[in-house]
Amino acid sequence: MIILFKYIIFLYFLRVVKFKYTSRIYYIMTRNNEKILKVLKETKRQLTTTELAEKTNIDIKNISRYTKQLEIDGYIERKTIQNGKIRVVNISLISEKPTIKEETKKIKDLTDE
Image 1: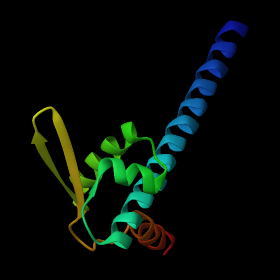
Image 2: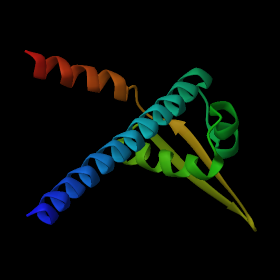
Image 3: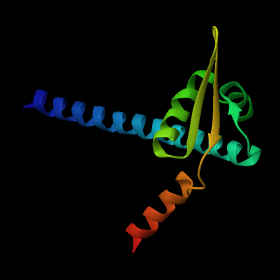
C-alpha cells in the first residue's frame, strides 16, 4: 500500500514538472515570435535570417524554427535564394494580423465573460 502511494505521488510529480517545462517552452517561443514580428514591422522590408538574428538577439539556429511556425500561422513569408553553395532566406511580413499577445488577450476576455 505504501509503495502504491509513493508511485502515485511520483507520477503526479512527473506530470507537474512536465507541464511547467512545456509551458515555459511555449512562453519562450511566444516571446521570441513577438520579437521577430516587432522587428519586421519596424523595418518594413525583407530581412535575412542573419539580420533578424542580430536584431532580435535570438540564436540563428532558432530563428528558422520560429519563422517556420510564423509562416505556417500566416504572419510572414520566407523566400529561399540559392546561389551556388550559398543559401539566403529572406523573411518579410505579409499581413497585419493581430499579434499573438492580442489574440491571447481576446481569448482571455472571451473566457472571462
